[in-house]
Length: 332
Image (cartoon, rainbow, N blue to C red; front, top):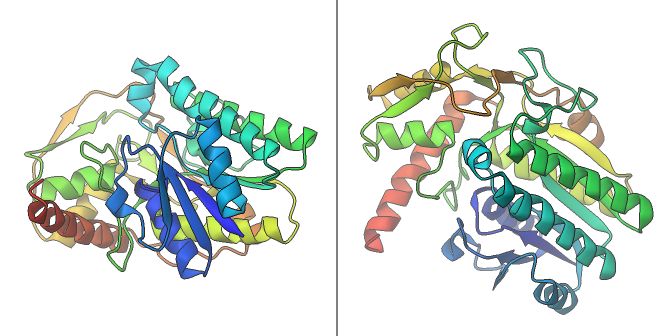
């Protein structure tokens, strides 16, 4: 049995590949390298460069590697970009996911794990949000993911397909063993941006809005270490293979930090100040989104191991230093 990881050369996908290999799984990656890097894919995994909407290619991969499960990360993830280019997001996130689901059904791949987002909830407030909360995405990114969830739900009702949808909150950090991390130039993840600024890769960073209805006026998010997130996927895979029903579950720590608290953590862990400017709100940003993750803990047997903001920041900073050395050695 082999697991197909789409987007496996990207940030979360590359961590997933290592997690699966560490657990003794066979892994094949399909990634078009729009934002990912082939060097980020563990050498023990098979890498195929291509688009998930290339039905012929994906079918060949499934057949050649006896794929029994798909973990689907490939997609676009920047909220303001989705506001500026909604049709692009619906094409890349929704239409291509539809194609991949259809291919899975046609090739009798019965286990499907989908990378979704807390953006399906919209502005949820400071109380932890459960999976039964009102779904009201405020950006095309969130809508594109929610439509994909619905397609997967309906396909599973009609075909021999079981799925797990994991709704991520804010993913951060890097592999504690230093094997991979967030490497995309111009990434918008807050902790990534703050670490780059601390290390002098950016002259300054900007806080987008200080007038939100939160304790310090800046957005509050539930930050989850990427290693805990991919561990949840591995547990979801085991659950599906063992005959578990389809499931939609949040992945977060059930508590949040504001933008200013994150910046303070980076300054504390790095040990120095760096320049931060203040600007207006960005389109599509919710004031606060925090997970109620009891369902994932109960159904998956998931117990987070990295629930510490300074530790998450420490791993992110270590990766940034490693990435600087790697890029210098490659002349990048």
